Length: 144
Length: 144
Length: 113
Length: 113
Ligand SMILES: Nc1ncnc2c1ncn2[C@@H]1O[C@H](COP(=O)(O)OP(=O)(O)O)[C@@H](O)[C@H]1O
Ligand SMILES: Nc1ncnc2c1ncn2[C@@H]1O[C@H](COP(=O)(O)OP(=O)(O)O)[C@@H](O)[C@H]1O
Image (cartoon, rainbow over all chains, first blue to last red; front, side, top):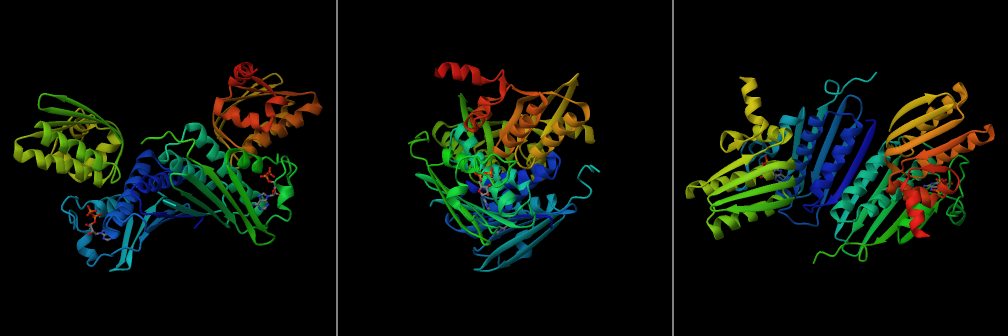
């Protein structure tokens, strides 16, 4: 990959906005359209919020890692926590499924809709890693 | 420290702007004045540019680490590279001193002017770490 | 997130400004719930004109307030949704449940038919 | 960084827009040097009205172009500097060397005396 950025940050709710700013400035460098930047912000927001709310049950001093890698062809995003993990990943990814009755169960739906590939790896009591890919070749205005 | 964010990124010139965005969004969370945010952006820009230009001689695939930590009292910024290092730190920090005739030798001047403390650690052929502190107690509008 | 409140009889109008995510939606939840409980509010109008970002946490809080008002005979109206925010709302199905006014939505739906 | 060029006789006016740092100042250097060499430009006017950021890399390229023009009998004028950019320039000493026009500078200097 041509460029790699890895941000590790404390699981404070305010850091969700900082993670969004990071993807937005990377996307701006990639010359993505505004609508694509908006979607990437939602994707990051969902993945990082899940780590804080579900993975760490809102505990505020745990580490979350956001890795962003890209070249001309694709953008790869990884979000990792060392939280409680997901016992049944297939079930968790069902639209509208949530273990929290106050939530909508749309996090994975948004990640899946806005990215071209979504992989979830999780081990109970060890943590969860979400890996997402967006193909860039068709959505970027070609400049050359 | 209440909040910690650590960004490790490739030594590409375009990443200097991303590092600035990161400090700007942290500073916005801290409710700093616009003029303080501008100064912090300059500080990050100088330190990261030095790692790329001097530390890595513009080699574009080397790692740079930017660590930002803060609590109510102070903001601590660390910039680290694994580049060529500085043989004589005292001389390097002199205003207008530069090993590059095209440059102004103002990087350390700006870092010193805009921060309350500046420490430089460097070992030739191993790398350079710049650690800076900004006291927040007097500059933030108290909200409580 | 800035919340500007306006109360007229049993109608609460909220002008929201900023980002509506897990960090800020709790403030919105409390702002609405307090008025429903204390002042007997039955109609909540959410003006999203100045909202710059929304994700599923924000949508969840809006849907939750709607669900709370419904059994009380109350209602919720969402107005002036910027088009990029409306796209996210559409994916969530919210416009099929809650009433929208003055959004790019109506026009867009019309065009698609 | 966007650079808009305007040439009238031996005067080059550049309207700059965006951030002037190590990543973008090289483009500015080339834009000016090319015109000095190819078209015999002797006066360079830099309009910084739309510049949102500057650091020592940007300042260095400006000073470098000034130093190149000087022995040729040329000159440089910097105009419309936003006040937060001017503060950084002031710290560098640039306003004591290069001519500034229409900047908050004059007013501020006047007030300080
Ligand atoms: N990082 C995570 N750690 C632990 N559990 C998670 C994580 N991410 C998602 N989950 C589980 O998957 C479920 C579905 O997630 P999602 O689709 O984002 O919906 P929601 O966040 O609204 O519950 C969550 O309710 C939770 O049980
Ligand atoms: N990260 C670094 N690695 C190696 N050398 C450095 C580094 N940072 C600064 N230096 C040395 O210190 C000198 C002064 O730095 P600075 O004050 O920023 O001015 P300038 O960047 O204009 O040269 C540089 O010219 C360089 O020789």
